[in-house]
Image (tube, rainbow, N blue to C red; front, side, top):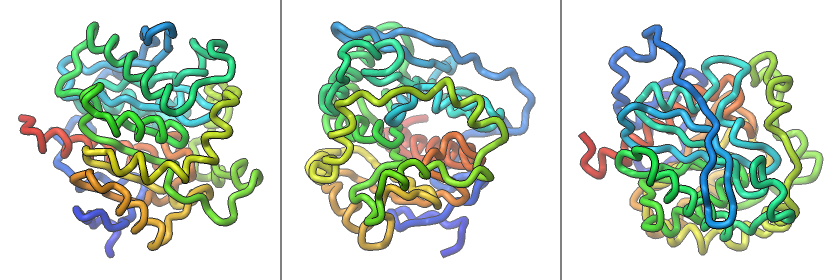
Length: 312
């Protein structure tokens, strides 16, 4: 299959870094080439029951929808606002193309790092973030609703939220750095190396990225390794379009043909399940040179989710 092909039936396709998405017609109108002010990213607080969550917000003036981005274990919302190169930030790119992007520090990180000290389970995090989105919706325009974008452990939370989409008007689910079956060779050393080669990232990535790193709440350690026993049950209850992206140099998850077939088959209620591979990327796709390509394809997918609901 050619590198620029897109299979609507969810067959694995490759995306070269810098390639535009063919999944949908993004209404670019030349915006990608215009010199325009960089959208402002600001920190906000969201009330979620007894917890206050911190988040990064980059708002479009009239948003088509809100992309809710959930980071992986040991990182923070800054994962989606990489500063090593202007092309890396999902927040600013999304706002330029008409989407408000809300990157939330999950329970147990930054603002809520000390309470609860052990962190929350995946299910509890899903409920907490859903409550935070109710608070957000009361104060901000959300367009047609919320598009969930999860990375690594944040993907498990996003999937759990999408399994009950009526709770926060979920329109679609985009996943990276997560899967259904761990790689057979998964070891602690493999996990440490899942960034991939230095050449995959802009210079300065690791210096600027230090601020986003932090301890992993204890509750997440156990749940990460038990996830594969819960994947099928959660996936079967998700009724919205789903897209998975595996990095070319992903070391944690199986992405062979058999594993991909099993993954797609688990989403019994989803109208569409796409599985793609991002060339030139390591596990942390949104921080590397491939980030712009990946983010554009994510936005193309979410555009399809909106047009499927009659967006103009």
